[in-house]
Image (cartoon, rainbow, N blue to C red):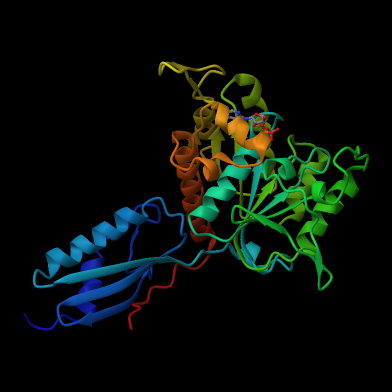
Length: 362
Ligand code: ADP
């Protein structure tokens, strides 16, 4: 066998396509560190997120392409890494400079499971290997301290608040700073001012994804928040029935009005599976998918009603952490991967210039 060259390897790998970005992994500049040592080949594939839904698939395809193109090769070692992308408008914002992506989780209505979804998605992204933060923007009814079972107060370091960290997620909530039994009677500007301080006076360090659990509704406070946070995009949480969908539509219209991309819709409480395996659509089913189609935005997935999801919220241990192999936890992970993929797609399409095409090898 004549010696294989880096160029031949890169040419072969052009057959592997990223299904979300619709380009091959070489022109996307994903292939790095090609090394050839006799009959052994190794290289790295650097994706745009560690939570890539097709990570394993791309790895297997790349390995197969090399084995078929170069039958004499003995070992093929493919290392998968990620360098998370960023939207230009977020990159240029003068605040949150170490944060690559900011994602608002919103619902038109309270009680649909918005906070539950925000928490489990944040923990799922962290478990996938991303650096993740979560801001509880619900100043009047902060539920994040309970959902993480955090009872400490954040400390000050160099005049900045240090977020509390649990399940791999850096968390900040007004609930950490005030007595939980105290009623907050701030007017709107004070409430959004408090959230703004979480953007400027908290030491977030470097984060791939900062998730904002917005207060429910589409009023003044929500509008002010989505205008003052430099957002990569939003996720709409709804339950399937018409009552909730009407509010979800209002939420989506709000984001469209302020030009924040809608990364997708999550339908929560989609169905219930009884002990004998029967599926019951308590709140109807399919409404989330319908509004996603109406607004031409991605549908990220449906989550069942499951007692342990509720218990996870009440005990401060999200199901994604407590029972990672359960079906509902796997559903959250799939939705988190779909969301991460949509962030990457949206970031790429937000770039005015095409992605740089260069063959990278060492
Ligand atoms: P929101 O943030 O929309 O007001 P929450 O996340 O606080 O809603 O959820 C409301 C209640 O419903 C909580 O007790 C939560 O544990 C529960 N819950 C949310 N989603 C589910 C689910 N899929 N299965 C079971 N309970 C759920």
